[in-house]
Length: 593
Image 1 (cartoon, rainbow, N blue to C red):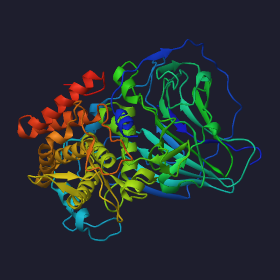
Image 2: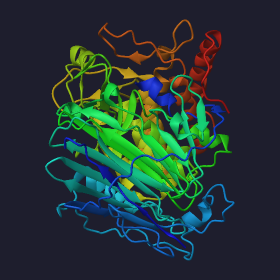
Image 3: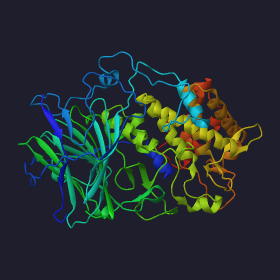
């Protein structure tokens, strides 16, 4: 067995929105182009290697302290990481494929240590849990736990790994049971330099393949020539390792207000890749402007023991085909979207931290292979940490539309985006068997029930139409859109199916009753659906999405049949009306059996 060190190479400079978002979760057909190439053996100028010391560190094993115990448990991740490479025949083109059964089975054990729950739970500061937090805790505590499934809870570290007069480097890292490592680094500069600041990552192996989605064509591109690299999320394989690598991002410093960040595409450069067969390694160099006015950021997922994906499987192409380069980024504290022009702050390259996590949702729901499995966990876990004390995920910027119509300011509550993320968390709980995800959903559900109780329109038979938006300060009542109402109802029903907590079913039934009571108000003369009820202002046209609401109805019908053993007549009627309109207008993309 050979020992491989992944080292950080420092080369300091010589001068020292909703419908589109929802589509991201859907699997889409992918094609890819293979270009001919004769491998090159040229190398760049050798750089000195510097091991960095840790000055501050926070370590958590997930947030539960629970992990599956397996044979050959490895030491905690360090800034300079040492891993063991599986022995490979010289004729092997790729590392061993991922054995999911072995990964989830813990190799030598039959049952798993589960989280221990207390009769007197406390928060992270040692204070007794009360109110919604205690209610959520007790619901999770009483939910059935599968002791025969492994708990995915990689070791999580957040630390300052370098700090001097020139730069400060912070890192978030996750080490999984199978030794896959996710790392995200953020660079701030304390001095200026004329040349770009450079660092590099080394990957073992000399047989090189690189894949990415071409932003111009939307198609997959594969090359064995490192000179064909583009400024895209890269999927690189060698005969001894694999890495998924983000664009080296450059953000404007001191503009991180209201959970926003401004990226600078003119300052972002693709990585430089060198394949060295003599040293049996691939060097990936990235760079940032050495300027205190900017922040550099990069993340990667690394494995040196197995492949992260199977490039003979079209499903892997479909799941990994996600936009994370231009108007969507996964960044230090979450998932960022292009800011709408009516948001404050705004610029053409302004991104805002989205309450949901559509890329992570796709990975964790559909990803039964390592690249998606690992990234789904990381993306969902980091976004989950943005849940505020009340239990929801705030939209940071101010919306001029919401401010004008409803007197709602920054840090508002969007029921749809929050509910989408809560649904993502349920899927993550099912995928990873980690109670932290379920706890966050239940905390959100308690907040949502409070919101619904205080902000609804009651229908003739006692149903509840719940307002789309919330705000902690005085504001005008908002409208109720059908897609929001359905998504929230579906979440409560799904949470009931997961926890068997009856109150979730009872509140979902109130929302279904409201839809039944207002059946005819939702259908227009064209058979398209009415976007919203109780909208009094005229600034928004309130036109229903082409197929999003139909998909919500589709899901609602499936859930209703699973719980009650039959279809719901009103849901079926609304689906048929929307289907008639979609067919007449050549709409595609809707769900089918």
